[in-house]
Image (tube, rainbow, N blue to C red):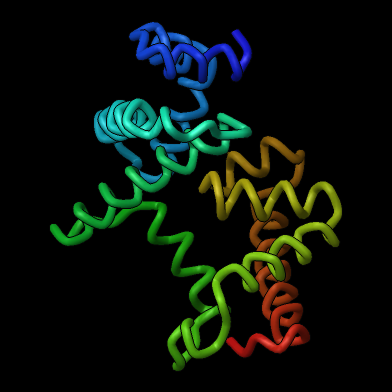
Amino acid sequence: MDDNAIIELFFERSENAIVELSAKYGLICIRTAENITFNKEDAQECVNDAYLGVWNAIPPARPKPLLSYVLRIVRNVSINRVQHNNALKRRSGYQECLDELEAELTSSETPETVYDAKLLSGYIEEFLDGLSRTDRLLFVRRYWYLDSFGELAAATGLRQGTVRTRLTRLRQRLKQHLFNQGVHV
């Protein structure tokens, strides 16, 4: 079933909307949640909570593309779960990914005084557009989907050490790109 038909089911308030959404995007939602929470039970709960969030948001929202909209909700719910678990002195791969980026992107000033979040997002998109397909895949899958180094190595055919090195260099290039745009991190 295509995305528009699924969205129409939501507008009709048909319970089949969730069934169809799960059938089409359930696996990638679970995978994304598991990459953030590192816990299958938490991931399943996060995806179910995300489906409820989608149910409550559509209507009035009419998201395009639907997958990005759903994955953003899954990520937000999963991140909230990780933050809750971290408050209980637990650690996840999500925190590890943030620590890697934080080393390059921290600033003593508040984000509101340095740049507008939308402007920063544009700079990052510009940076990603300038990368090779492999580098973009590595960066996005590591820092958006939170794939492990092993998963990235398998997806690209590179060794894990090479993946780590390329990601380190990509973070440094991002930092330099942002500096060149006037964003001091």
